Length: 476
Ligand code: SF4
Image (tube, rainbow, N blue to C red; front, side, top):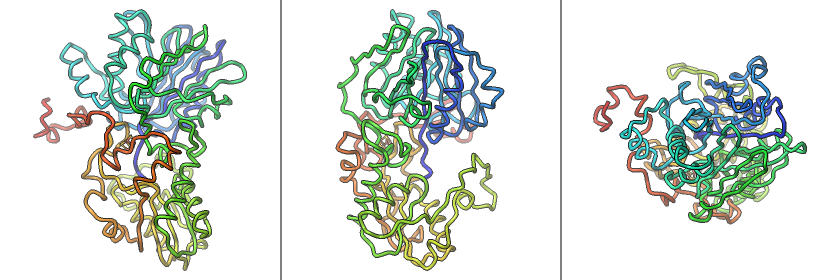
């Protein structure tokens, strides 16, 4: 809990001009869980781009009036963002739009480049001027640079993919084409589908495909470039099978919605499998199994099925919280605003509590307090992920060992800190079963990084105050 995914991407191409902004709206709505800081839509109106982007949730940024101000269009790209590189400001909202000598382009990106700092530095030394602090602009710059020499936008993207390293699922729009691509490792998901009336939809997760009434067709393969235009679909595969596939295992555990399929594996089934494994690995005698909403619920069901301990709804999430702003100094407990315990379920019971992760331990400790206040007699926490021991460089905010409680304390010590009667994590070697025997990235758990570890891991240089830059080696 409290880990953030960077983004959700969405793209659509129709056979004739339609109210395409509204389709993006519903697609983004289904991807809201992947990013809640900002969102944006760019509509292609016969080669002219019309956009709206801002900070806020999808329903806050796009009022009925804003949506109806968009023209009908044949194509659109859209994005919902949680920034793991680049701060929270309007400049960093996506999709990014670029006008260049050969036309224009709008680009939406999910992931982080592991060579972003080197690429940006080289571009700046050659005269590039950046307007944002996100590495999506670096991708946009490189694709544009390649486009000036390449015969087509897809060829430019293919050449850019020889230079980019790390995690990127992209949706890109030119005046005449909608293009999507997934990095050769396939860190972040990307898939596409089609509606009965011939509209193609590309999205980070299949839940957004079905949300707009389209049929899921398939995942975009790691390294694949798909080009949609009025002449049909073309798949380019020159970057496929050049790296080992490494879908982020944490997509199954936490990031993705349980009704999504990722690379052919149901997220719900993966979480049920994690719960079953937890029950086998860390059995306990208890009266009830409950989950921390939302991503702990499926694993709690799995634990209950395997152990025979009844499943209950012991925590309720406030669905209408939005982005309630609580200043750090406020005395209101953020966890209490988001969650409440169901006394009639947990009072005087020995409870197994399933959570998806423990990062700093602060949230887990507050949830334990909530359950104790509601009368829980014993609280046994089971975590449907292994302990976080290493930073992630591929599009999440697990950015430093300093913030990871498991780097500094043993399991019994963590149990004591958060106030649990016992604690058990998912073993690293059970991730294979969770993934349904796919290849995956688990670097934040085992330190096995698929790419070169970035030499420069400093983030948000451009949002640092002078005092914060002192000693960081970053010259202002
Ligand atoms: Fe996912 Fe962890 Fe790999 Fe990052 S390091 S991509 S969070 S599995």
